[in-house]
Amino acid sequence: MILVKSIHHLQQALENYRQKGQSIGFVPTMGALHPGHLSLIAQSRAQCHITVCSIFVNPTQFNNPHDFEKYPITIEKDIELLTSAGCNILFFPTVNEMYPQNETVIHYPLGYLETILEGKYRPGHFQGVCQIVDKLLNAVNPTTLFLGQKDYQQCMVIAEMMRIRNHKAALVIGNTVREADRLAMSSRNMRLSTTERQQALKIIEVLKLIKQQLLPGSVTSLCISAITTLEENGFKVDYVEIANANNLEIIKQWDGGTPIVALAAAFINEIRLIDNLILYP
Ligand code: PAF
Image 1 (cartoon, rainbow, N blue to C red):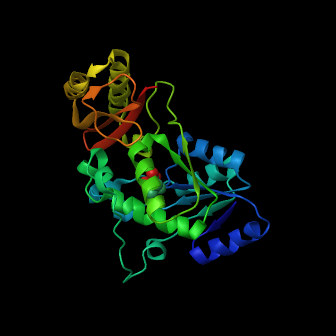
Image 2: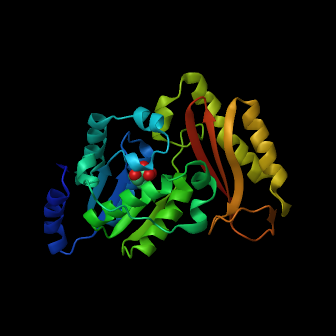
C-alpha cells in the first residue's frame, strides 16, 4: 500500500492506473477503522481495479468541539488493517492540505435533508461532510464511491451533493456491519466502557421492536415507546423516527406499502450513537 499525504502525490499515483483505464474505488473514512470500513474496502476490491482509502478527521463536520477532541485516532493500527485488507493507496492529508487558508467556503443547498434528524440535532454537520467529501472526490476522482448504510442520512446527503456538484462516480452503499450481539460497528464504540457497551445494545433492540410491532396506520406510538425505553435505560435521546426510506420524509401514518426506515440517535453519557433499521420492505 502506498501512503500519500498531498493531493498532488495522490493524483500522480493514480495517473498510472487511469492511463491504463483501470477503475478506482474510494472509501472515505475518519480512521479508527473497524470491520464496517473493511467490508467497504472488500467491496471496492471486488468491484474496482484499485482501492483508495482516505483517513481524515474532518474538523468542519464536528458541531461539538469536545467530540472532535475525543475522536479516536489509531493510525498505526489503521495502516496495518488497510495493508492486510489489500487497499492500494491510503490518502492521509493534513488539515492545511484539505482546507487551504483564505479559500471560499461553498454552501450546499441541501434543503429539507439538512433540517431533519442529524441535520436538526447537529447544525452545520452536513455542510462539513459535503465540503470534505466534495474535496475528496475532486482529489481522487473515483469510478465508485463506497459508503456505509449505518450513516443512512449521510448517504442521502452525499448523493445530493454529488448531484449538485456533478460528480460522476457511482455510489455503492454497504450494509451496516454489526457485532455478534447486533451492536452497529462504529469508531465511537471504542469510547464506551463495559457497562455503556452493554447499555448501547438497547438502541438496536428498540429498533427491532418497532419492526416487530409495525402495522399500517399511526406509527407515532412505536417511536414514543422506543424513546421511553431508551430514557428508562439511561439514554438522552435526540430522536427515534420512522421515515420514508427514499427521501427521509418523516412518517406518522404508514400506508403499508411505502418503503420505510427507523432511525435513532441517543447519548450514553457524552457518547452519541446512531443506528437505523429498514422496516419495510
Ligand atoms: O462517515 C464518515 O466517516 C465521514 O463523515 C466521512 C464520510 C469520511 C466524511 O468525513
